[in-house]
Image (cartoon, rainbow over all chains, first blue to last red; front, side):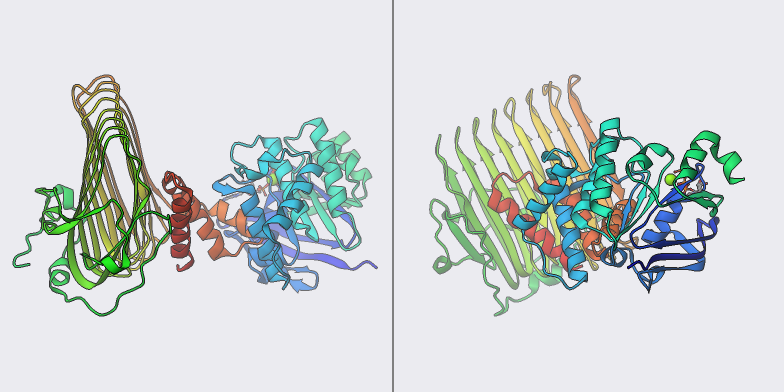
Length: 251
Length: 357
Ligand SMILES: Nc1ncnc2c1ncn2[C@@H]1O[C@H](COP(=O)(O)OP(=O)(O)OP(=O)(O)O)[C@@H](O)[C@H]1O
Ligand SMILES: [Mg+2]
C-alpha cells in the first residue's frame, strides 16, 4: 500500500539572509525514487541541508511533513532517528573519530531514539563488515578516522556503507555519483537498490548525470531551477535533459 | 608556613597564573573528608599520601624509599617542598614494576618533594593521581642516566583547590623522559617543568591535556633545554576550555650553540567550548645552534560546525557529538601514554569530564 512519505509545500529557505529556495513543492510516496537534477547553484544541496536540519539554513515559509510528522520541528539527530538519511555531496573528515566508533554510536543513538536495544560491539561489527563487503569497501577503512585521507570516490562509498548500516526509510543522496569511477558507480547503484528499494522506503537522488539513473531507475525526474521545481516528468526527462540541456528543457 | 612568598604576576613566567587563593589555602586546615584512593591497578608498588603524609597502612611502597629527599630548587613553589617525601632509585639495568601513587588532599596544604634517579639503562614507570580538595604542591627531581627510560603519567582530578607541580629533569645521553599530564578535575593547577637534555641524543617529551570549566584556571609552563647534539623533544599539549575558564600553555625550547641536529616539536592547540572561555598559548623557540629542526604550531579554535552537523545528521545527540569531537581533539596528546591500561584510564577520565559538561 502506498502512502505519502515526504510532502514539501511551498518551501522557502535562506542562507545568510539570501533566499535560495523560493516556493518548492514536492511529494514523494513510499516505494518511489525521485531524481532531482538542475543547474549548479540552483539550490539542490540547500534542499538536502534544509531537510537534514543544518544550522544556518533557515526556513522562512512553507512546510515539510515526513511520515505524517512535522519534519522541521525536529532536531537533526531526531530526523535521523525518524528515518531520514542525508548522503553528503562533500562528506566531512573527522580526525580522531574512527568510522566504526562513529557508526556504532550513530546506529545505537537512533535505536535508542526509537526505543530499541543497543547493538553490542560484536553484533555491530558483523553488520558493518557485511555492509562494507557489499559495497566493496576494504575492511581496514572501517577502522580509519571518518573520511580522513579517503579519496573522493571512497568518501561516497563510505556514505553508502553508512546508509547500509543505518537502514533509513528516506535517503536524500546529494551527488553520490560524482567522483565515482565506472565500476564504483555500478557498485553504488546496486547498493542504493539493495538498501533503499522497498515499499516502505523512498529516495531523493540529486544528480547531474544520467549514468546513475541507468542503475537506479527513477519513477520521477524533477528539474530544480532557481529554488523551485521548474519541471517534472518520468525517467525519460533525464534523457531529454542530457540531450538538450537545462536551458531548453526547464525554460 | 609562616610567610608565603609568591611570584608576582608581572613576572613573565607567571603572567597567566592566578595564585591569589594560595595564601588562604596554605593556612586551611585538613578535614576528615578523605576520598578513597583511585587506583588504576598496575600490580606494582603503590603509595598513598594523605595531605602529603605517607599512609603506610594503605601502601606497599616496594622499592620506593620514604624519608628525606635529595631535591632542592630555587623555584618559588617547588622550594616549599622541603620535608620528607619519596625517592625511587634504580641501579644500572634495573627494570621496575610500574609505581602508582595517589595523593589525597583533605582540604589543607601539603608540600611534598620526590626524586626519581635512574642509573644507566634503567627503566621505570610512575603514575600519579591527585584527588580531594586543598593545595597539593609537589617538587619532583628526576635524573636519567645513559639510555635510561622513564614514563611518567600524572592526572589531576582534585575536585577543588590547587595542584602545583614543579618537575626538574636531567636527561642523560640517549635517555628518554616522557611525561604526560591530564588535568580533568575541578582544581586550579600549575604544571611547571624544566627539562635539561644534558647528554647527546637525549629524548624529552612532555605534554598532555588540560580540561577546564566553570571559573577554573589551569596552566602548563614547560621549558626544554638542549645543550648537547642530536637531541629530540616533543611538547604536544591540548587545552579545552568551557564556560568562563582559562587554560594556558607556555612551551619553550632552548637549543644551545653546541646542540646541533636537535629536533624539537611543539604543538599547542586550544579548543574553546564557549566564547566566554579563554585559551592562552605561548610557543617559544630560542635557538643558538644553526643546524636544527624545530617545528612549532599554536592554534585556538572552536568545534567544527560542519563535523557537528555530520555527526548529528547520523543520529548522534548534540551533546554527544560535541563530546566525541572534543575527545578526538585531546586524543593525540593522551595517546602518547605507552601503557595501555594507563592510557585507557586517562581517556576514561577525559570522557567522564566531557560527560559532565
Ligand atoms: N552561506 C551562503 N551565503 C550565501 N549564499 C550561499 C551560501 N551557501 C550557499 N549559497 C548559495 O546558494 C545557492 C545554492 O547552492 P546549492 O549548494 O544548494 O546549489 P546546488 O544546486 O547544490 O549546486 P551544485 O550543482 O553546484 O551542487 C548558490 O548560489 C550558493 O552560492
Ligand atoms: Mg550541490
